[in-house]
Image (cartoon, rainbow, N blue to C red; front, top):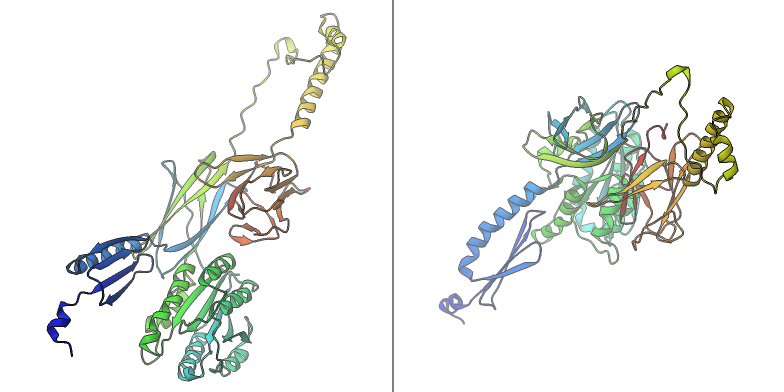
Length: 508
């Protein structure tokens, strides 16, 4: 048997893993190395002796605080509108409930006028909540029963603009009450929630539930996930869920129920899903009770924020508008939005009318458009007023022909990056893709050969149509097969993002 002295002589290795984004520290001690290893999120590793572990902890606390300061605190989506006035219409939602926010907007040192806030929800707005319960282990009967009680309480607290649905999952998702079900259907569904499965297809079930929410007509949508975080998926991963949730505008509530200390680390899956979709995370205690604040403030995580407008009348050309939303908790949300405003039309000079005779413009007429003899005849001073009229007609024909060959600029597309190029749309049908036969060729592997088409309709409006591309077409982060465009719309083709700017008067 080894003595206590021998044990003290043994060196240890301490691995401190710091996740800045999720404020998570893991410490693992091993009895076979002489040094302690300190690493932080980003892949940099330094070897420290074991007496420096305390210093590492101090540094870790600093890094976590810095990560929290940089964390995203709100969803802010803005859409530029040109009529009846040039404005930026913005919708926002805080990830943590906040009251009495203040909003400031500026561009290039100019302070822009911000309209009074319109709080969410407005009259026609709807919320959709889909409760999804993990029933994949019969040994978790008591936990699943506790989940059902929470759902019952939350539904009873629901407001008129909120719609609910209930589903359970193990290997498959089983929809017990579709979204929008009435009170009796929801009550019946709650009574049907029982632990019964054996296999947990965690991520696949979440993806299926996101599809159900995406198809429901609501302004804001939330997937409320009750689970221990254990996953037995082989193909599906976290990285598959986040883009789908973002595309569908779905916020994930992570409500974690670990039946033992050994299972607690799996709740990190729920925490990460919640944080990366802008939803809350809460962990039940040993008695299967959620924190009281989570139940009391459950709906305020989705029902907050609202809408405001930023006046753009002071701006012309390509600009960036900086928006700062200050919260009462001291956390500010800052966004920079690219906008494009047409330059004001130049004032036309008033022609001189000396002696009541109109002054004809001096227009160069080229021999390859008209015969030299014709030019000479109409240049003689003996022809009089009739010759002047004919000369004016010829000048008009030359200008019309030139414009017809070149085509007027109908709209522009700006590549959204630091050195984004701008492309002019001069024809009513404008194709975009990787193939050289497109009107706009984008040499990016994520873009299909013939990816999308922008078409101007008879009324002067524009719409974008996806041409059965591999990676799809997104407009303002939402997938679209066809979409009627407005000024400032963000069109994403694969990894390439284009900002659409019609000329003044082109979009009704």
